[in-house]
Length: 316
Image (cartoon, rainbow, N blue to C red):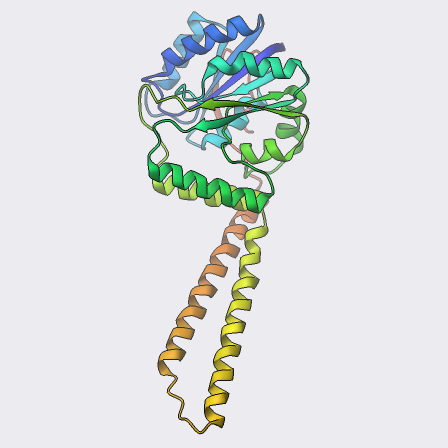
């Protein structure tokens, strides 16, 4: 059964703040729409998050849940929620309330006025450290240049029209997904709503340094092939260095000077080896993406659902 508004919330180990978040989001959703559902997608939590979703559904049938069989990552959780939402408009936001649900009515207003995608754009990153701000700025800048889409300030806080949701979940078959990039790539009529990132009330961020690096590598290689151009550029750099060193050696020989090139040769070999390793690493990342796609494994596996009108299939 379809509704006007679906709200999809990916969650991992959010037991400390989930009840408060659901109460807040439910209150706002009820004022924004007469017909809504809230879908919490548990991404393999090891705490009481699934039990809290069960409890919330018992008290409020409009709160539903999808429990993944293990932790597949936020992108997979978002995909599962979008896939099984029924709303004519679908909002995605985080469970920690750093995406302000108070802006959902504004997003709906844009949608009712014809926008098919409404992006929540960060203006102030709140309590983020200087390292986090710099890391985000570098990543968004690099990705924007590689992809051709300006993702500065972008977030997973969005509203999508049903037509866009169907495109993302039915017509884009790749298993390596990047929600922010794909929602920009599909086009359609878009609008933005600026917001300030609220401080996290409970719990802590699950994005450590290594996880962020892996996420950056995954999203860049899943969305753009431009990094492959680094390989021929490195080869061109080595060719230029070789020509310069060769010309210098010939010039010295013609001038009758002895050539003591051990240090130069050693540096050249190390430089060449470094560039070769970088090139092989980049190619390896793309081969890994191709390998994942060829295997054809589902994006995620569902263990069970809570309160869904049409119980989802186990594989997505």
